[in-house]
Image (cartoon, rainbow, N blue to C red; front, side, top):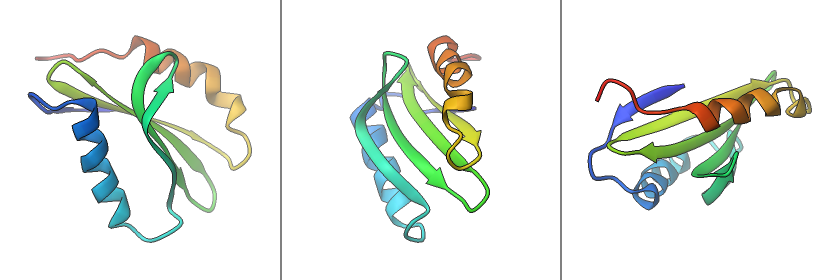
Length: 98
């Protein structure tokens, strides 16, 4: 989980910024980019990071002036094993220190 100050940025602005960054990476590493996704009922940008030994399901959203990114890592094919705890993390995440 990370948080970054992004005063005035909207979720669509976050999606555009992430899309440009992901497109600059090697092909096949990032998949299933959804600029209008949702995790645990929270509007978010979602995508997967695909590595040989693990996958990371990313959820990125804006809480006031802060962008919060939560990455849920699992073995390939074992995403369901961490789904519940990841959804709880997304539901409970809030900006701090602002």
